[in-house]
Image (cartoon, rainbow, N blue to C red; front, side, top):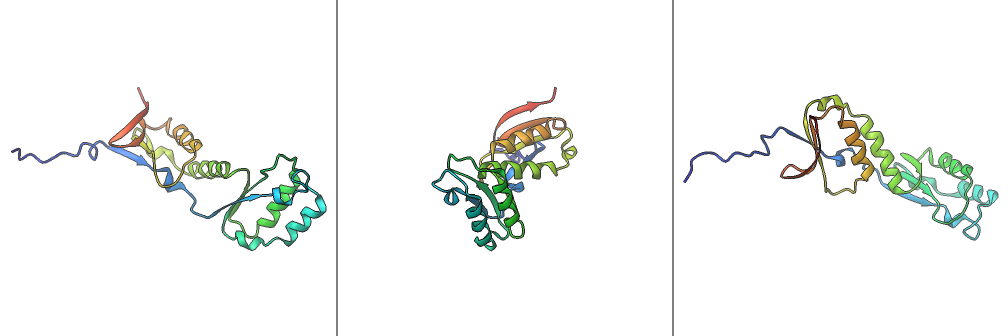
Length: 169
């Protein structure tokens, strides 16, 4: 029986794990479809829509991230979304035009833009894969782009099972 201590090669590898979940804004999300306020799901009537915006309970969006969109195949004038933004402004934490996926992409892009990537100069980085929160693919591309000028290597996954992405020569 060997008396040598077991060496944890992964712990001693000098890897830095970046978990994109750490940059997830935890505010509640709301998908706000304007389809129900279209006439016959085709036309936005200015007077009716303005009345809806004025009468709607905007307080319910307090502190939430709202994504405005239209699920109907209709031409919606830009000013309609502008009106929604004005109405949501005093309550919503943030609001966007587009799907939830598009909103998440923007939120991650903004969060990653705040990181000082010079701290990763010549480091071996693992961008953590699977987790509890669905991370948009665009966030993985964004962090890779930000790390490329600095990192010695970039991997995807877990320390015990990763996919090499980039290695500086």
